[in-house]
Length: 292
Image (cartoon, rainbow, N blue to C red; front, side, top):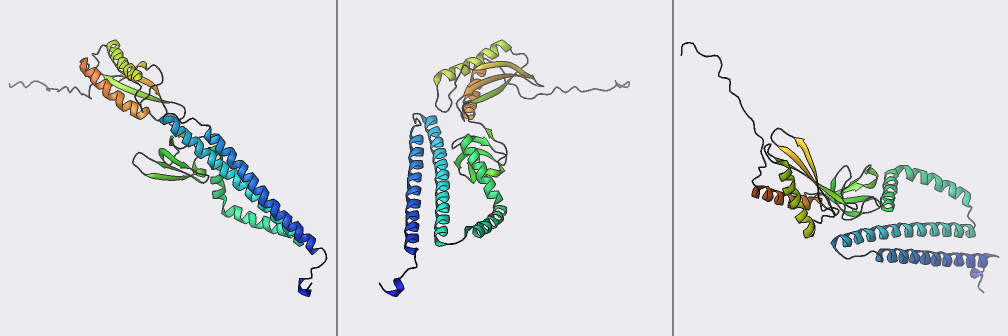
């Protein structure tokens, strides 16, 4: 064997161990990522997809599952690579103590510089795991209100009613108002004139709501028997009656628009007035003129 190929004693054993470590790193990383991906794919495939609302829910669950799978896969990869690198450095003969101490100092410095990024990622994990909201939900997150388009570890994207796309870092979301979780409620306040027969007006409004409930119109699905809660307010110009409908998530606005139109037509047909603000003005003629 040529002299330049002569290796120090034990070098061949070290190289063999390093090669074994690298092979183990590749195999363990591949097996772990494959297991995680298969688990998340199976979990996402179990969600039923019949119906528009269920398809939206399935897409939400699928995205949440895939995102969590990516996080787990990334954590496993980082852990395996770090452990493998440390083992290889140990075989090379590098003392790990000072290296780990230096890495700790660098990690602290990076932690201070990336604290907002870390905060956003931790908040994103909490949102995904707790299922606070998902794709298709209508939410109020403080800075903006709109329909969720994407949820990632760092930020949430939602589009408001004017079409504006808002990108809100997850760490800045301190409270969430979800308008479309499980079910929603349409609350309608209808004003009628003071001389109206209230029992008749309530029956007409409730009949119109019951008719809509029985029709099962898409995007305006009423889940339960409509409820007439009665007189809500005695205003300056009208008596306010409150109608309440329990509807599918995110369908409360469409249901309200359809219901208002039907109530208006029903009250008009019954000759019941929906009054507008009125004022009665009394003119003081003043003292009588003795010369007249």
